[in-house]
Amino acid sequence: MDEVERKAELGESPKLWPGPGQGLVVPGYRRDHEAVDPPHDWPDYRGTILRHPKRPLVPIPNTLSDVTGPALGEDRVGEADFDLTAGFAGEPQGQRLVVHGRVLDGNGRPVRDTLVEVWQANAAGRYWHKVDTHPAPLDPNFTGVGRCMTDSEGRYRFVTVRPGAYPWGNHYNAWRPAHIHFSLFGRAFAQRLVTQMYFPDDPMFPYDPIFNAVRDHQDRKRLICEFDFDATTPEWALGYRFDIVLRGREQTPFEEAH
Amino acid sequence: MSIGSDPRRLAPTPSQTVGPYFGFALPWPQGPFVVPEGTAGAIRIGGRILDGEGRPVPDAMVETWQADAEGRFAHPDDPRGAVEWGEFRGFARCPVDAEGLYSILTLKPGPVPGPGETIQAPHVAMSIFARGLLQRLVTRVYFGDEEERNAEDPVLSTLPFGPDVRSTLIADPVDGGYRFDVRLQGDDETLFFAI
Image 1 (cartoon, chains in turn cyan, green):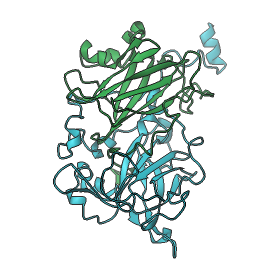
Image 2 (cartoon, chains in turn blue, red):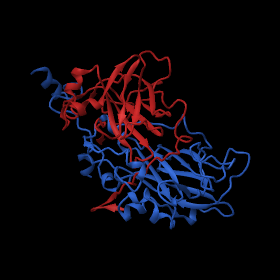
Image 3 (tube, each protein chain N blue to C red):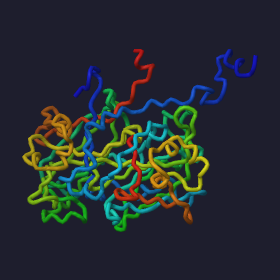
Image 4 (cartoon, chains in turn orange, yellow):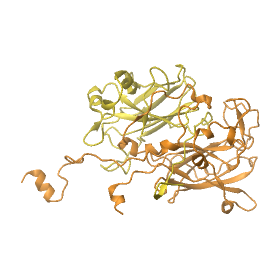
């Protein structure tokens, strides 16, 4: 009996991982996002014209580099960072909102303890950013930046004000529908998502090439939050719910057996 | 919300552009530092983001993710067991400046196990976000002084393109680190991956 057989008999791994002939099998993330994401080349949005690659993307299997990812948060998120209306001398202008929801993966599982970052324009449609030259007022009591971690059920919650629509130079009389930017990490480099949350029934929807770059109506609907009466707080704030779905992992044989 | 026959299956939320106004929200002072300044063996990886006319993109943001110097990840899905990292974060976020330049401080990663029995050459995974990018672009930074490992790398060695395109993934050694420019479009366009 050689060394490998002896160890196999004892139930030990005959060799340090990866074992002989076994190799490394990493369950990857499904690619169903490719059907819903906007294309890189979308000339209606002029910013894409000189910035989209012309060579097709090269698909590569998910490796350890892609199924792992940073665990950010503890050092970046303060207790009050979920409240975009706090920390200033006074109250911001605008309609106060509670924006909340769950972060799930494509298999319906909560994404726990993951960093959610948001940023937005103020109630007048102006960003706290030197590049924004829209002649609407800045609000000294609102910068429009928030962060929080999801809880054990994948829930997050922000307190903010409703952002205004704002003009941009893309085409004649171009206005962005009101939106809040979201940035999420999930638990893997492959799950990284930056997106925008819109509000129900925005009259700017038909005119916005960024929103409409998501080609399917059903997919666009998932960028729109829902009014949430249960999250609406008497005498204080309107509630909106926005659930976010990150890519789901391919099922492992173990899971499929259940 | 479900897709196909599996009721648990949910369609992903679509991507939207990061836009031009993230600068007051996403960057933070330690963002570009995978390791603190003064860390022994630290290298800089930096370069320029350029558009289809070869002009610097002044409003992009780069994020990187990588293994440590041993080729391991501080993550429960590393089957060798997650390592405990001290001040090495594995991740960097760096907005570009007005000239389109980014620079991160990190340690050179070790080789990482690839599919099957393959070994991936040392590499850094990179996302690029910008106004005009409706979804992030993903590429990889390989190292120009790792010719032997690069030749064995399961991604680099199976690209459906010639050496000119392959070379867009290779960072050039320079004083103190490596130079890696990203060309979003054009004849010398960087190779981007669907992961």
